[in-house]
Length: 226
Image (cartoon, rainbow, N blue to C red; front, side, top):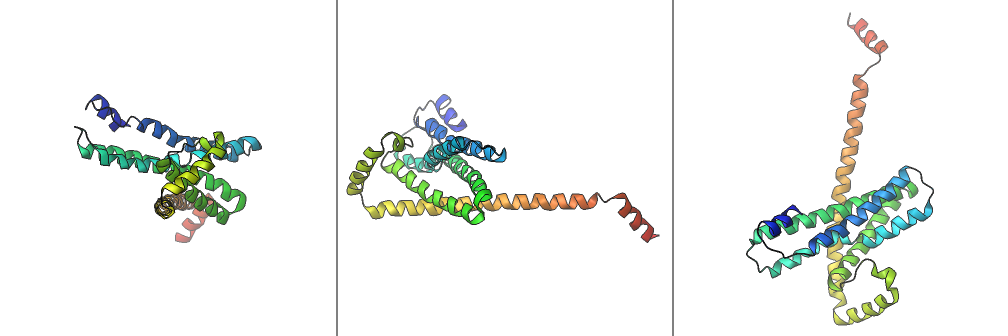
């Protein structure tokens, strides 16, 4: 966002006005995943709130990785602002969206894993990445919003049939599959680093416990040295 502010206030260029709104939408899944995770940690029994957070997270989750597709606007670059500046700005927003989406999914997976086991947690995450990739597709190419499935469920079914008649199903499948593979790869990296961090912290804690030996053990070692 800082680069966008510089672009507007310093470089006096007012394009890309849609980016702040897209970034706000990208934060929504993280906020509701944090709420979902917090209720789980607090052992809340409010199932309605659990369900509400899960549904809202599910509907808005594609908005986070969707920021990656905003890179398409760079091909319409007609501005006095240097292209490299816009590339850095768009890439920073794209990676922010990808991180927000992956982090929110990680929190959801942690809860599902604690409820149903590790395998169920990964099945959930892979399924959500697949559905999220499809959601990015319909958002970018069909221009659907996250709230439309709730407001116009029947109308969307008719629009889907119309759109599928206008474009190749193979093209839609190719985009969704490629985006799915890319997102799943980055999500796997996040999970790997998170587990390495937790394992490293546990190892350091064990070493600290060993260093804080009880007095009896220290006396025995000292006596043996004598």
